Figure 1 (cartoon, one colour):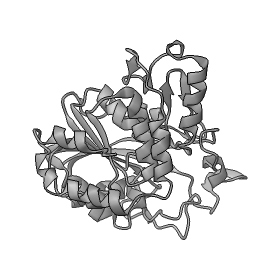
Figure 2: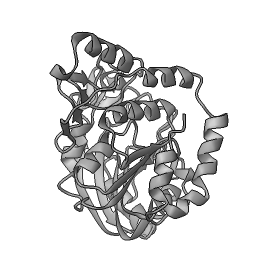
Figure 3: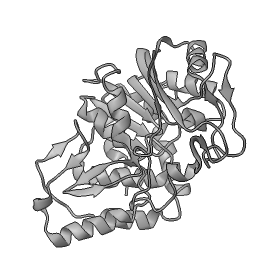
Length: 321
């Protein structure tokens, strides 16, 4: 199955046309040599999803498509059984014909924190780096974005996105199974989102330059990351694990983060939100079958991680390229 042919057809006539010089070869190599061992099983599950019809779609207040009474009880149970095969569902939530996919993260909380701080997305080309299963891609489209692209190398997230897209059927929203380091200097997007990614990068400065390379001149970066308290010289470099995560490298203070952005050539830098991650925002559900935030914190002191570091605190920064 070619997941990308419609994407290629769309960008041939828009400002992303120059991406066709490299992208098809990258994705062809991915399909031939890099597929996850479970990928064929996920494909079969995706192909088995019921074809439904609805005129009900809400991307402005949620990611919700269809009504419960548009499918019968057997179809509903089949839908739930198939979508559960894509567990764990991390980012969401989604509502498909009345089925509530209760994801680990309430990603709508994050959207609520930032949507009134960013520039109007109407008619914008938008890129979301490390987009997971694509929850925020749909919210960006609901906010008026003209063309939305997400990149995330995790193949399960790619299949989850396509499961949701099976019902929403909007070709202006796409997810590509790539990492940010695989992107050329596109300089084509009006807004670039990078949320929950920077602390997973071994070189945060290189990462910021990679983000800047995707923006048009004057374009807007929306960056959300873990932070710690401190001055412009404060950066936490955790040991082997932070909140049980192995791949956490640098947690700057808000002042240090602003300094990094300025050093990389961003301007009009604004800190628009700080928020301690709440147990209501990241938690266990029966759609993940794994540990979650409560298990990552000191059971005797939730202000600390299980390793003794400050508990997850996040900040949102907005800057211009």
